[in-house]
Length: 474
Figure 1: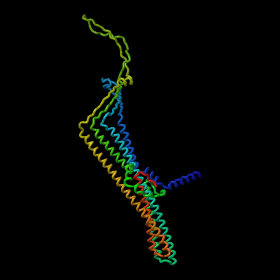
Figure 2 (figure 1 turned 90 degrees about the vertical axis):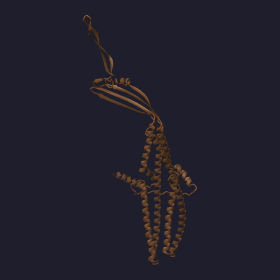
Figure 3 (figure 1 turned 120 degrees about the vertical axis):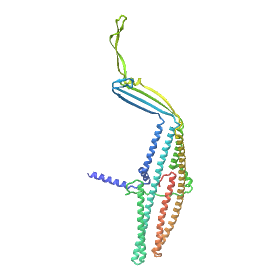
Figure 4 (figure 1 turned 135 degrees about the vertical axis):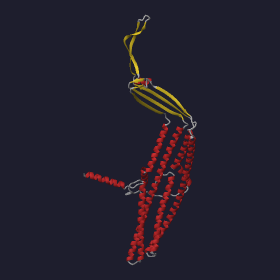
């Protein structure tokens, strides 16, 4: 019993450690992709299009069908085997095997197969697009959690600094070294910094909730993420120009492939519609046999004593007798295998169908297919334009984020030096509490702004990596 309890304790400990295990970015992305319903729905669409490819392939092969029937006849009825009336119970079987194959149909079957393959490839590209979007959303939420965690750290540091300043001012006030207003100003600043910490923790909890919702987790409790070493690479404007990023995106982005596949599919659709104008030639073959219980075969003759019957009269009136042989024919039901072989019929036929007039159906089909092709071309062009504009915006945002990041760091460095000088002056009473708090608040805002600029710049760089097909990692 003690061993069972110890094992149960170890199990609970293992579950607790696993529940508190920090998530990496890749683990978050993998979990989101495996539990997202939109991904599952798109995967089913891919499977459906794959099944359509298999069906289109199968239409190129002959169609073979077989049938069998059994009939019972009672009373006086026509024997379907002998076509004569019979007053007995008759069992009749019919077996049929037929095959047909299209020889020429305006290449519709082949074009349908090619179109279904293109649709299948387009659906796979759609799935990749959904996966990419989810991965980018998860990475964005992951960065937001990292930013808010750092923001909480800044707020905690600011609160600790305010606490030290307040405690020092309280001792000085109790000794009469400073006025009450100076102490109350620092007390008010401490309360403000405490509120800022509460707000930062609230934002952190909200960002964690957003990330867990993307991961389709049921609970946010004990959810933690790993903190990678976030290093910002040097910004190279030439390697991240609009042209460079756009050319890479044209190769890597799945929505470009999907639009191209759908355009090619529309071309095949036009070829299919044109194929309805051509004659159709097909070949068919048939095997048929019948089996009947009334079918009989002769097995022999039974010779009985001959019969003497009157056959006429002589001129004198005497009766003439004739000897008639009395032989009985012996029969039996024809065996199944013999009937099957003897009654086997075979046929081969060709069918040529020439469209002459069908209510302008072929013409209207071609017209609609041409319209569909033009729509696919416009959609492809629109997808490319949208991607180009998105890349333009991403490059511009990255350039602006780089400038803000560098400017913010310079401002933060200057404010940190200014704060140290003013802190020393405040401690010796050279400046007022108001002036010191002004410098301190400016430094706090600069730290928060620098932190925001850092993660914003990192996010913009990851967006550029995303367009160039690079992995989303830190």
